[in-house]
Amino acid sequence: MKVKSEYVLKTVGDQFIVVPIGQEAVKFHGMLTLNETGKFLFENLKEEISLEDLTKKLVDEYDVSAEVAAADVLKFVNILKERNIME
Figure: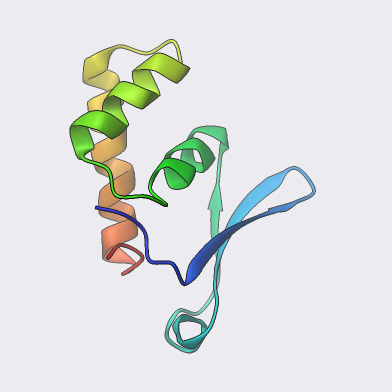
């Protein structure tokens, strides 16, 4: 799984924002604001990656248990899927 290439991450001040480009800009109205963890996950979703590998990366990067990381990754990925940001 990975995010569509038509969505890019921008830093505006101290905020991380996902914005659509190209044809996706016509379909997607608005922006998605991320926190530091969301930024980390989004950046790792730019390339094909499994839920398990993404969870492992989150555990390795942050002081979080595998169970909490797995739940957070699933929630984040589901939000992206709901907004049609995932391929």
